[in-house]
Length: 107
Length: 151
Image (cartoon, rainbow over all chains, first blue to last red; front, side, top):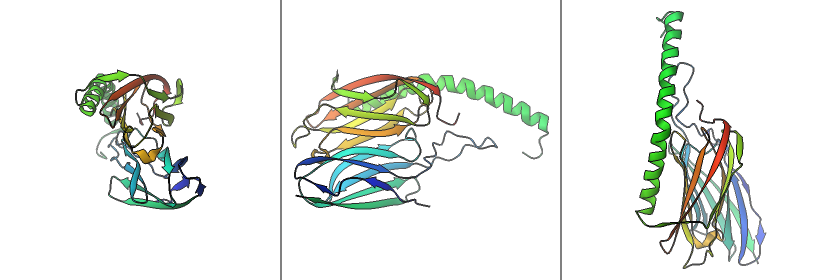
């Protein structure tokens, strides 16, 4: 079912630094455009929302459409002023939410 | 389906393939219109200025199934002047919507990268909205050798 997301971000940063965050969730991202071998459309099943929060405050949100390639990859930035926790969540069309957390120490 | 003879099944397949083909060419112009509608809805009829937004895409995408896309907006990203939303549309896909990115001052940079699917050679259009209610746009043509919507 839900696969483990992959995250890449620094564990330490200086106050006020803008860090780069890369995330990837293994997922089929079935577009709903494809047909199976009997000609029936394959139902859409995609990650439709990705959210990144830092200490409960929104950093980056993406509303995704079927045009996002399989294994949705997101690269974005965050400005860190204090130590804390990044929370990531991916929402599937079927309602499943995959979450991940990563701590960062800011000096 | 099991009751069909192989010949009928083939004939059916061929005719439905022909219909799909016609359907696709209609979809293309419909998609461009739908893309324009999405942008109009996003901007709410406000004036959209050209520039500030840069779109990074390969000029020729050999495989439309996964095309790297990077969007960035030249903005200070301070608490009172930042890019709040970016709408990305592809005017030649069956569904023109690609993604909407939402930023906050905590984002630090108005920049996002992902990988997208493209059905055919088409324009990628990005519209950015700032916290002051200004809109900026930019577009880029990408040539696609093999489409990526399962067609």
